[in-house]
Image (tube, rainbow, N blue to C red; front, side, top):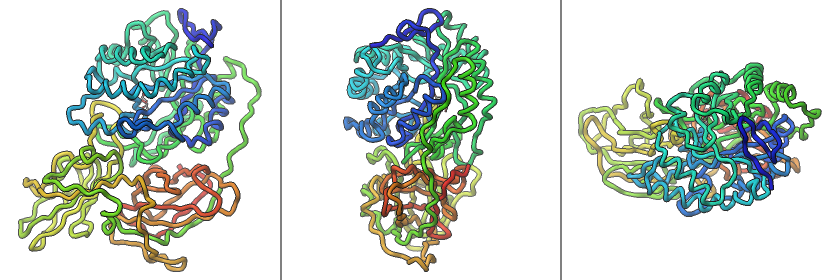
Length: 590
Ligand code: GLA
């Protein structure tokens, strides 16, 4: 058993002064086979602590059905950190932000139209309690007070950026204490007045989140909290990327200089991120007010890059740590092999329009239902109705589209309607008598994870109009794409004929095999030249979304997702591809 607490400005571990030098690694963004490697590198970098969030939606994918296996095996991650010699900070929230789908909240909360999030609303708190009943008993034996590595836990997350409901914050605090959490508790907020005021709780240590100007941040905190340890709970040493924006980087020297200031001020620190990893599957979040989804890579320009290699920043940061807290010579784990497996032709395909009944669940209703009302959390929803004719030509309006609809008239592609993209010309069409079938494939591109627009229902939230007239009578198919093994593929080309791609702009699944001759597969990166937008599946695992708009150019495939022999690659392309070929390269292109 260990004790971790503070006296005055000093953190004490077993009554010895300690500066927390922590780095964030999210177990849910790294395949479990690589947890040890990343944690060893954190330790080798001079850090003494790992910090992780806990995403509720990963652990309770359906209400009352819990998952703590594989990449969700939080306890194993914490035990591995302990074996490596690290302390652990856990931020279970219930809300985590983190550029993670819906800030970690389960999408099924939104099936209840009355649900109110992140405040003292008992139906919300009941769901939190049920989750904590499952989560916190797993963490209890791992607390330092019970001999484990967890030294501290956070209440909520940057709550002052969102609200000011102290009754709620105290409820979350008490929920943790009631379930045996007796380690140091803290909150974290941006260092603005309203954030500190909204996010702090009496008697609980406040920490600040910032990327620069630590001195000013600590000074502002001192207006609200004196004679307590100073800690930057999120030191943003890099940043994340949205689709269609520039890739973010931050100079290693700049990060090193800011860290130097934090240490000079006797601050403790948690690097957000030390290693970002990947937003696998449909788990990326999004920001507002102009809806901007986060890309698949969560490289974050962190000290370890997406595939776990130390970057220039790793060494620059280590030098600063070494200056204040002298380190042993650097010993890193063996580098992980990377390989360019070359080009693979996806010889089989399956057009979405002909397999809707096989891969989707159909519902019929007068008006279009949201994804959540259809009982679906992630992926795509297909909406179809009949438009009677003759009629004059009016613009097609979706009220509202969450987030991006590709539109088809009698199965012919006629355009795209995107959330918050106002400058596109409206879709209009002539409807041949006696009418035509209008189909909309709506992609949920990731729920908002930050800010006042957190409540982010997907699909079509109200209705579809031609001009001012709502269209009624809809068939809807849920397409969660959670099982690509049931897709009835057909051979559409052979090795010498790659002409067989469907260039009609209809959504299509493509399948092919990557043969790996070596006994041990290596890490690799998928390059999708000529493809437009869609989703990648490796041996049935949803690797994430791709989009030619960038900035992401290659998609990291960690070796544990591959096997020696035949690997099944499925690509769901929403628009079109110039060739049914994909290429595996041995380096990320940023
Ligand atoms: C805030 C949140 C984090 C993360 C960062 C930006 O500080 O608390 O979860 O979203 O912003 O990466």
